[in-house]
Each structure stands twice: as structure tokens, then as C-alpha cells.
Image 1 (cartoon, helix red, strand yellow):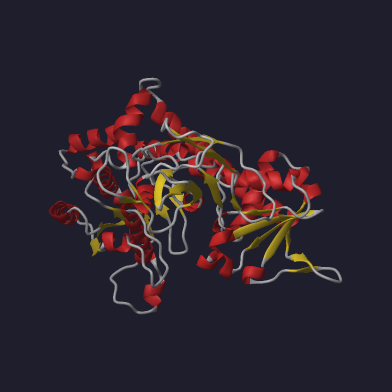
Image 2 (image 1 turned 45 degrees about the vertical axis):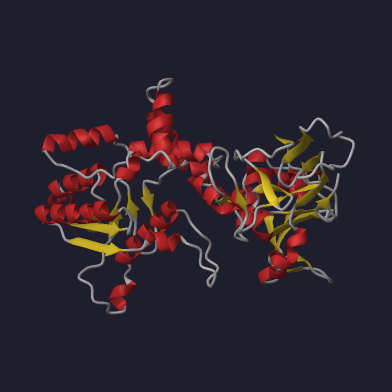
Length: 477
């Protein structure tokens, strides 16, 4: 077996390479080492590459290297429609794309000059990495698949990616290397507390271990349980979905029309959905949404379930990523909005709530109730705001590219997109992230402390998502 170790130069990957090199004959391995230079950290990263190259040579292991410009790759591309990514997201995507390329058999068929095509790649993720990942996913509100954390084996058409150290603690790895007298490289960015992963590693986990010294072990066990249960659910959905999800919508004269593209439709009969346990209902609804490429979070799933079980015929629900749900007398139907409805021309169809200041906004699409009060004593709350400098109306809406906010205790304006990236807000949650605009400025943003707006006090309370009728989403109070 031609197995490559993803060698970064850190303690974990160095230990994995040393351990496999010592047993390669016994295990029947043709061992390789691979290193991707991400184009970050300047001379420090150059030193990592040189260290890995020398270690591979010392162990007699073939070495493969490549360079990428991660910062450039993370930027948005207007021509292709590629959205911006965080540096961490882009680095991971590039790294795994290279791994798949190294294992691609198509390169041989295309007669690309290559010395070898690898059968598998091993990464050095540890029990500590697993615990940090599970805790990070829990903090973001992950489903069961998220709590499964890092999979011991990641399958792909090109070949598997293996994680043989998932049961090993980082402290054990460092003890092993110290016993060998083997040095390793330290990534200076691993100490930067601006990154969520580092704050979890250096602040939150040590704090929680004061309550439970075995927390890392328990988080890793949770990941194993979630991984096995998720595998069972996937098999169960593969069995149930074809029986319960109907392709297409009813056609005149009988039968169903499947449709294509924006005309595609799926349906679930209400009497069959109602008979299922809530856990199966959620799984089935999310599975149906995934057929359109939509990943529903908990709030969106519960709103969809509420429409299905408690809604009335004719009610509709707009979901993230262009997904639309409609309740009929007998079915819940899912379809994708036409492309024209997703573009800028459909801006009026996006959730927008307008209010006269002072006032209250109930926003079921965002799951929020927002109250805007006056703190200026000389202005009576029953009067329109007349004082110069105070806006008269405010609008709660989705954030959009170009929005900027002024963070509390921070100088200068920041792009909302960058703030969401720093908060690691992605997917469905990011698509429906509300901001409050007044006087041409964003004066409030969910989950973020902004510089206070003189004369105004804004308070937000979470509310249960509601199912809305298919009426315009611009409302005034």
C-alpha cells in the first residue's frame, strides 16, 4: 500500500511519520510524505517546508511538495460567483483538493508525468483535535453529523484519507517524540487567540476541565457515538425516503410531473409525516431539503415542521438558499424558487420589516423581536422623532455585500462579511443574518456589539419561528 503522511512539521504529523516509518516493513507500507506550503507565515512557513524535506530524507521517505496562494484563493471571485472564504476554510479546501489529486488514478490514464499515485493519505488528527472540533460544533449548534466531529476514515473516489491518531492524546505524542530526541516545528499562529479554535484550545477547554478532567475523552466518545448513530440514520433515510418523499407535483389528469431545474418539486403526504416520531420527521424534512442543495438549521427545520403539521392549505414558507415550501390540503411541497427570484430583482421578497421609531418589530423569519426605544428625555415616545440626527424609521433586513458596521471598542468601519467570517458564521445561518438599518447606517447586528447609537436603545429577544402566509414581507408598526 502506498501511504503518504500529511507532514506539516508539527508534533502530531512528525510523530505519525516516525511511528509508521519504524513499522513500514511490518505493515507492508510504501511510505511517502506530502507537504503543502500555503503561502502564509513567510519565512516561518519556508522553515517548515525545509524541516519536512530534511526529515523525509533522513527517514528515506519520498517527499512531495506543492505551493498555493491561500490568501488569493480565499477572496471572492465576481466572474465565477465564488463567495469569499476565511483563510482557514480556503486552506482546508486547497489541502484536501491536493490530497485527492495525489491519489487520482486519472493522472495515470492521462499519462501525466508522475513517479507514483498514492493509495491513501494519513493525517495526524488527535484525540485533542477531536475534542476541540466537537466542542466548536456544539457551540455553533450542530446537528448529529456535526457532533460526529472528525471521521476516522474519509472515503473519496480517489482514495481514503485516514486518521490513525484519533485515540491518541497530544501529550502522549510529545512524550513519544521527546523519548526519541526528535524535534518538531511550532506554528506561531496556534497561539493567536483571534482564532476560535485557539480560544477553545487555550481558554475554554482548560476552564471546562476544571469541572471535568476527563472532558476531552468524553467529547471524543461523544464523537464516536454520533458517528455511528449518523451512519445508522443515513442508512435509515436511504430506506425510508423513497417510500415517503414523492417526486414532482400532481399533474392534471392524474400522475405527477417531476419537472427540472427551478420547476423541480418534491412532496410528502401529511398523514404519513404526522405518524412519524419527531426525530424521523426532522430527518426526513432535512433529507428532502438536501435534494435541492439546501442545508437547514434547527430554526428553519422547525419552521418547516410547523408548516407541515400545523399549517393550513395555501400557507407558504420561504427558506434559505432559494427553497420554498407550500402546504396543501394533503401534502407539504418543496421546490426551488426560479433563478430570477433569487437575484437582485427579487429584493422585495426578502425578509424586511420597517418600523417608525420608537417601535417594536416582530420578525418570525429571523426568530426575533426587536424593540427600538428613545433615550432622549426631551422627545416624547408618542411623537415622531423631530430631533436633528435621530432617524425616524428603521428597517430590519438581511445583511448584504457592502454593509459596514462600527464595532464597540474598535476604531473604523468593518465589513459585515468580515465580521461574520470572524464569527465563523456559514451556510444557512449566514444566509439569514439580520441587521437593522436606520438613517442609511447599520446600527444593530445580531450577536455583535456595535458602537451605541446616540439617543436610541435597541433590545432583541429571540422568539419561536412562525409560519407566514404568502404575503409581502415588508411590514410597518
